[in-house]
Length: 344
Image (cartoon, rainbow, N blue to C red):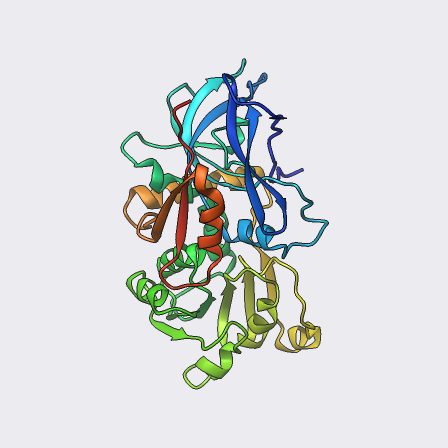
């Protein structure tokens, strides 16, 4: 069975003092607050990481907004999965890793805290020379690289990426390396489209509203649609738009749009167009590790920029303000990073 995202247990306490840490808890929809918890001890085969940086991902926002269904999440809950930190303590029978190693984490949720526990599977050791703030976004690269490979992109194909948020901008950088004939991206904000052009987009289109139909905007230039459509939006409604934008015999790779879809989906259109639809999380643990390695190497080679889109840095103690900021749909707010380091 392939491993999935886990939320490491954390014992909340009602006092402050030695052996305790700050952690963020979403008490209910739209309400995130700070609590105290015991600093966890790693069991056999586990590693404790002192968290430094955690990015606020779009999936965190969906939970904060209440846009995920009850079978996905219940409240109270903890968020945060784009993690970089330092190994702080090792449990018994952990080899290879060592205290002091800078690391990025994957498949760990609930990391808006000072310390988290995980297994070596979730850890990718980073070079000492790589700034930790640039390491947290390596977490998104396995799914993005897998999406690119599922797209079977080649120089004769036209590719559409809808949405240029944090993951969308990283996706644009990766897809450009696959040399599509045209790499078309859409977004609501000029600032993000400007970055997309820098990252390899051949065509950029500003949508007039979140519910605009993409083909109404780009159809004059691409009347036959796109061989590969990669939605990088949050809500599932974007899949209806992706189906409309896909060409005959095209494929849709669902990096985004994994939230609830409230619009009717025309499956006859899927059948008529002979579309293939793929999800993007690797289906085997070994693939996840392979893409983790590959993603880090792309960053180290200077081919993927994980730092330039960071627009705000906020301390963990101000996480409620950070979520309010990230939840405002603006062009000059792209990636908000939480600094989880304290003096404890």
